[in-house]
Image (cartoon, rainbow, N blue to C red; front, side, top):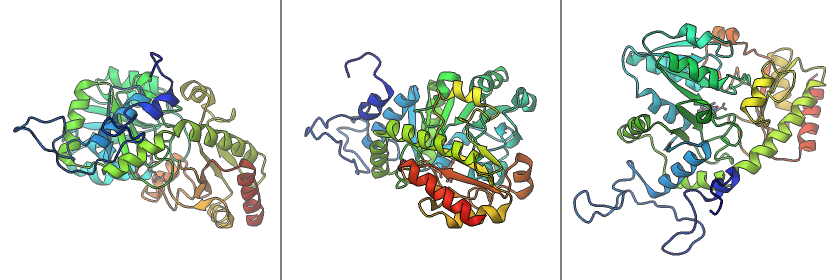
Length: 386
Ligand code: P1T
């Protein structure tokens, strides 16, 4: 690469990659080997055993670190494997403050699993200034936020939350899955760890599960690397290769998905059956100014909106033809789902009600299709259901 600081799209195609030195193959081979020959005991070329490190995984981790503007990237078998490995840094008595509106699986991991190991958790509305700081105690070691949140697309101020966490000597981890590094780079805003479900935008084709962590803190990186190997929730080389392939088109895909999503969000606002549209790119979003600053004017491919009640929401879902009824998000094809009955059903009903996740809420993951076809599908489904 000739420029001193190559741009995002260039790094997505080239960092950690490039022609194979042995053969000249323009695409790197997949290193399936589980173990690597040593010239003498402990004398090797950086690879011993694939759980500890693998050439294909290392390429992916190098590329991910570059895209997030971080020094160290770590790849995992799923987003939840990345989150679990972060939790392994903590011990009995440690306290975590987390954003209340988070992916249902994150809520379940914290409350149904990690509490059993002596950790305690406090959920706060981290969009409110001062809420994180007010919930922190002397035992708080980690603040965990998601922004934009799943599924209500709320925005947390990363820089302000990093300051609050650091004043209390805690680390800040940001689940940035809904944004992708094309849109938002939390480390540049003061976060200590950025986490992704790579299953979503990074992979981008609904064909690989993965997760990652990126940090610029050498000490944290060393501890995470130790636990990545010790707990062993690592991705397969083939999955790493698929993710590298996905990353190459990340900028193109997310730009197109965001353009389509903004058009859809505006269109839904004009439908009388739709009560509220949640999309940070709309000027009516309560945190639009913050989103504009933090997300660089591109707002991602997820839109959620509220209909009168659960029955109406289910009828619309069943009437959609081009949008596929399915969980997950971030891939090239458009998906639609009911968070209360699907992705967030592991969040107890009273907790859902508390955070404003109602039965009439639908979530769209907008793909790269022609937007006119997506609009027509939504129009016919809303019309049929009304
Ligand atoms: O599914 P997995 O790769 O383990 O990632 C978990 C996860 C973590 N964080 C966020 C913000 C997520 O959205 C997810 C997974 N979410 C879905 C499957 C979903 O449909 O919302």
